[in-house]
Structures are given as structure tokens and as C-alpha cells.
Length: 319
Image (cartoon, rainbow, N blue to C red):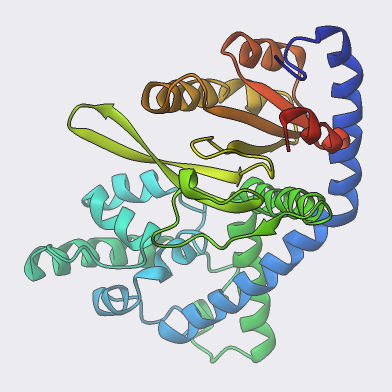
């Protein structure tokens, strides 16, 4: 029996209330989350300026020693460079750039001679495109003042945060959503269990819940992958062999992006059911802009949902 998926006559009102809740949160807390990230990012940029002697020493050796400097340097050029644009301009191996940016490392198996040549090509691109309006000392050859360095670091940090503004907001919103779930559960006698090695979703004890667990699913007879799930709750009255409720926390600041990604949940529930059977329960915890088109698609795929503004509906899911 569905809780919300089979009640389209309620969707319009719930959509409006959900949008209001998200907008109120955004106006009050999103700027703070963004500013906090910008402060941290500014410090990272200032470290990068120290490593590169205020961008006067961007060499292959520096890039090798400090791979994490790469995205900062991309935002220090005129114009700022997207990752793929840098790869194209420098004519370097995509795997090198991906490792440096996503894993803050040099590919461990790359031959030293090839690595040096690739990093040299990257450093040459930066040498030509560094934004000298932001770093005026590169033209005057004078040592920059502390104020100039901090100002330049702030500008680059703004560029970096602007490029990832949506993920910053999404991360802050997800943390808030999980905190709301945790408070609701603990007020009703549930206990939080930290995830880690050895904790499996189907061995949780009744009355326990965990966040961000990986659940193994079988894609074929010989292939298994892990699906990350935001919240896993074993109801207090569970009997041996019962499966927990799985919750995916989702928020959206506009109506477009959820509809672009709505198939992701359908794929996830299909993989879960193919591995654990039709008794597996997987729902969405929604806050923000989710229109009737999105809701109708998820309902057709057999996915129910819980609105944050009506979190007490968790009781209707047996929690």
C-alpha cells in the first residue's frame, strides 16, 4: 500500500509546501554554507600560492608535488578553464588530470618520463593564461603585498565556489535532511549506529538506523556493485528476516534538474528488487522542487516518497 504515490489529489498542495520549505531554508542558511566553504577554499588557494611562489613558479615539479593545485590553477586563468578545456589545450592524458583533481594524486603507474612531459605541457598552458589582472605582480615583477595575495586568493576562491555552488548547497541540504530524520527517530526510541566495515544493512537490529550505507546488488552472475543509500532504518517491531526501510534524501532548488535525473531512482529500485526481491522497501525523502511530472514518473516505477514537511508520515511506512 502506498503512502503518497497513489494520492495525486494531494500532490499539488504538497509540491507548494515543499517549495516553500526549501526556499525558506535557502534564504536563511544557504549563504552561510556558501561563505563557510569560501573561507576554507580561500585558505586552500593561499596554500597554492605559497607552493607556487605566488604563481611565479608553476613547474612540472610543483604539479607533481602538489596535484591538488590543479583545479585552483584552472580558476586562476583568463578565462577560467573547464577541466576538459585544459585537457584539450595541453593535449594531455585525461586520466592524469582526473587523478590530480578527483584523487589529489599522480597516477601511480604512469611512467616518470611520460608524467614529466605531460605536466610540462600543463604548466605551459598556465604560464600563458594566468589572469594578470588578478595577479598584478606578475607584470610588475614586484613582490605582492599580503593584501594583494589575500584579494587574489578570494577572487579565485569565488570562482571555484561558483563552479561548484550547486554541490555546496546540495551537501548542506542533505546534511540537514539527515539531521531531521535522526531527530525524529531518536525522539521515538531509535538508536543511531555508525556505518563502517562489517555493518550490513540486513543485519541491523530492530530500532537501529544508519546513514550512508553501501548495499551490494548483483548486476549479473559474476558482477556485484555497491549502491549507496542515505538512510537505513530497521523498524522497532521488526521480526527476524525482515528488511529495513531504505531512504534516499533528495532536495532540489528548481524543477528542471530532478526531471533530468529521475531515472536514477528507477534504476536503483530495479537493482535492489532483482537482488533482494519485491519485499525490499525503498522510498524518497523529498524537499524542494519536485513537480507532478517527477512524482508521476517515480510512482509509475513503484517508488513511494516521504515529504519533509510531513515527516510524521514515517509512521505510515511502519517506522
